[in-house]
Image (cartoon, rainbow, N blue to C red; front, side, top):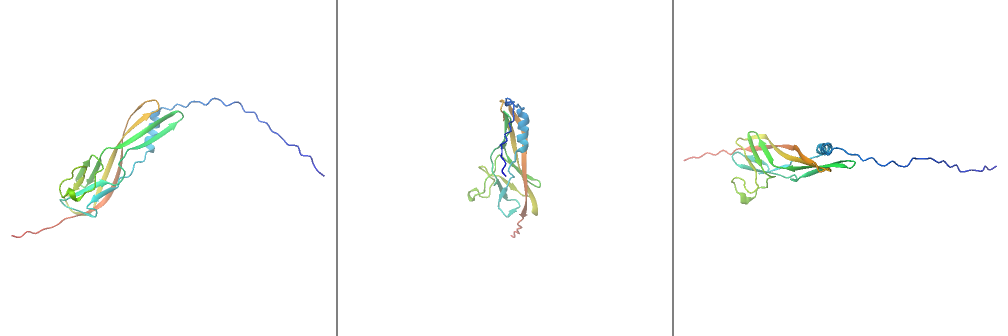
Length: 177
């Protein structure tokens, strides 16, 4: 016994697509969203001398992490905002010692000798010895934004910080006449 099979056809009706609504969002809201999503690089501080530092001698410091501006964009419909963060200086603090440098510093070279840093160099001078002295580096980024409608402005400062431990040695000398 065979059955005849009849194909079944189902038809659905869908109304024509409505024109897409144009979504307009205030770009400042998008700028705040982009700012909050921005991830700045954690500073990686390098030193010379690398292992231990010495009392009353310069310890050169510089960043091994990237020193460049960062961008983030947020979009909603036809609106967008781009946030730009630019590093402005590097601040290095160890106890009561602190130094602010206009850039990322640079590695010490033999040509620099034992004198004060110059030509982009940055250094601390420890006044007392000890183990486990915390050295903190802070990099503030100035943040600005531009929006799809031509608006823009200042969004303040974002800061990134890191700390490392340093041993500072002291050399004792005896002079006899």
